Amino acid sequence: MNRRTTRTPWSGRLASIVALAATTALLAACGGSGGEEETGGEAAGLELVTEGTLTVCSDIPYPPFEVEDASAESGYSGFDMDIMQEIANRLELTLSVQDVSFDALQSGAVLGAGQCDLGASAMTITPERAENLDFSDPYYDSLQSLLVPGDSGVTSLATFTGALGVQQGTTGQAFAEENAPDGVQLVEFPSDGELWPALQGDTIQGILQDLPVNVEHVRTDSSYVVVEEFQTDESYGFAFAKGERPNLLAAVNEQLQAMRDDGTYDTIYDRYFSTEG
Image (cartoon, rainbow, N blue to C red; front, side, top):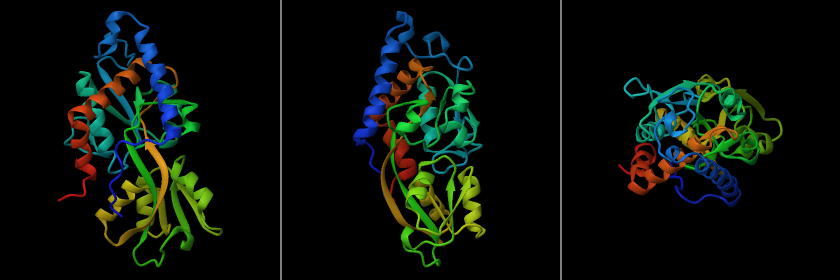
């Protein structure tokens, strides 16, 4: 159940999407004046919403990827937020986080409206989303999973009955729509912040969503169990308004690679997903 996800291999169909986005970003970044190749604010051609600030939109809470945290510099922590904070620091920018609905984020609405510079919200790269968004290089591989009460008698999706909770606009919802048995009622919620209490209150009888989030709930309350994992070949990427932030996209990809090269990525990864100790 507490399965460590793969860090580096990406599926072929996602790789083609990311390669195209990265190539476009790098070409655009090289097309400006010589001074714009340096990182660090609007002077470097990053075209930020607010000068000197990296403004990130995210659907919060979604542990362990994004949670409110008064002790964190930005007011938020989690795997995504820690990576964003590190990238902001390396670009000598202040990190500002805005809490938005996931559906508005994955559709490209808030990014296209210029509300934030990018989205960091455990978002799976898909061909459909890539029509409206540009994506960074993949930074995390994930699975879908089914979470139920431990005494429910459910052993798999095939044996599930009742109301199954999903998050609106997610790949988990799409998977459930295609694979849930006849008679199962799918109930949409705007975020995990509503899904989890609904399961605890018996409004729904299970949750189908990203494995790390369901595992986090099991850690919180051992009376719930993940009874099935679904191999869906999903990888997360940071999202950008389509065709509008090529220099910032290139800068984020550069810092992601630098973090992998110097071990910072592994340190952040182990903070949230290590099965040791």
